[in-house]
Picture (tube, rainbow, N blue to C red):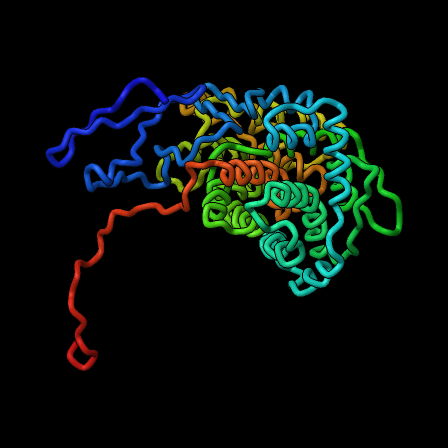
Length: 428
């Protein structure tokens, strides 16, 4: 706890509110006793100025463009680590040694199969169902299959549920894609890496062997690392809020997936690629940049700027390089991808974008990479959910173990009708 106090004068009362200091970042004013002392609540739509919890997992400094997982810069993890190593780090707080990592990878790979009855569950959906709609259903349904890991008071069951969610998410995501394509499901293989296994389950067909391209595998692994956690965002807060009621972990992650589906959150990379397709060719970029600068035009450039980052999104720097590697390796000639590269260069040099700090963000580059690899836009948010499951699970575990955590119960500023008497229908 910090040394200082914040003084507040309200309703004729002077109050001293404790000021708490984190290991890094801004101090916070502890208002837990504010209502009891003053009879007043705070008003903070979107909770953008409110710390809802203590956390040791992820730190963001949006002004400086910093993202740390357990203290490690995201750039170092993306360039030097693997997604499984980052998953262990987020869950356990420290990087594993080789023996510990091998054991963790072995455990995850042995949980990748899903109950055969789940295949029947998929067939209840229409073939044209959005993959995120399917994911909301099948992840929530896991609690109907794995009764032995839904007791949240048992640390062993929490760990098993965490491992199951991380391991089965790629299998279920690949099955959602296969179902939409009318292709047979592909079973996981334990001899492949987490990311290679997912790519094979997504793109392999029984008629021929599928060989994972190491450049594509590396790019996908980076995308997974860069989306693994992002502090108390909307979907993570949803997972924590659902978990605060004592809901089972599978239900909590399903709630997170539902929140992530929104275009202002997980759907942003899909929106960015749709915008590039609307522009169509590099020759039309100046026209759309002019529209973006026009306050009277509703058009907005998607994939630029970020609510948190007022500097270059550190994740975008990593993916910018990966995008070039993937496009060069695949040798794709696509006007949409040419448009993306040209728009990136023009925006980085345009004073309007520089002044407003509208840098290309992680959604801009991830959409370009995923499209080049062959994913339809409807799968983009599913891939985001796959990666973010690790962060959600880590945050959920932290929340369950926090003695200060209570069931979420935000207050409100009521502006409706005051008390009035009921009038019978025939007298109104």
